Amino acid sequence: MPSAKGPPQTSEELRAAILARYEDLSKRLQQIARYVLDEPNAVALETLAVIGERAGVQPSAIVRFAKAIGFDSASQMQKVIRDGLIAGSSVLGYSERVRQFSEDAEARKGGRPADVLAEFVEGNVLALNNLRELVPGDDLRTAVDLMADAETIYVVGFRRSLPVSSYLAYSLQQLNKRTVFVDGVGGLTRQQIQSIGPADLLIDVSFHPYAEETIQAVQMALTHNAKVLSISDSLVSPTAKPATLALQVKEAEIRKFRSLAATMCLAQALVISFAFEMSQTEANVARKPQARRRRAG
Image (cartoon, rainbow, N blue to C red; front, side, top):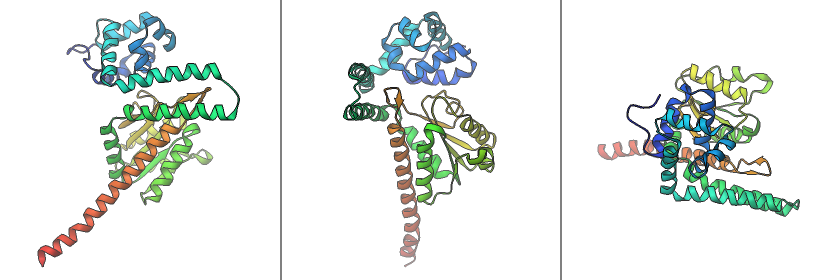
């Protein structure tokens, strides 16, 4: 239902309103909600006809969605998103560069290995530059705090997510953090995560189409009152929506193949930040006895 406080005034308020009301929306309006969250550039700049075609809905459904969020019209919602993009002009530039890149790649579409490599490099550079705008610094800080506070970190990710989840588990183990890698070998996903508890953290990596095993792991973690840090392609994915904290990543898609460069970069940033946090904590602990000895002397 629309808020008594009126429609969202900023893109951040709009995002919060969509996340808060997502479960109460019909399936069709949830479909639009996901498109608005995942493709704000298109929603801000395109006509309702184009948005509807890309989102797979009728333009009238977009109007209904805008009114469900509290706006008087879809154009009012578009203006809020557009104002947010103008304020963050680098994101708007990213949208235009991605569009131009896609058109150029489709036009040249050669088979030479050097051309393919150049396309993947260019596409991944765009995605990596966008990553800085997409993931708020405060959310990164919260993610590192969740990792530092957890007694045990469970890591899960299947299919395309497996390289990232295995990297996270390996790196955390190298840092002597108690870590359980939920790899589901032998169909034992549930058994591997059944000991998770309120003091623990589950990190899941999941992209569409979302692995059922990952969804089950998230549900079990929440049932056991554990915290969940989700790395996903949408804030309303079945793994991100119920999570304690969700970090969204938009990967490059080149020739129908989706990359993992941005996700791996985010995983590395989390691990290195966590390592720095641990070293700072250890240094502070080491300094305390020295300070006490100096005071006693």
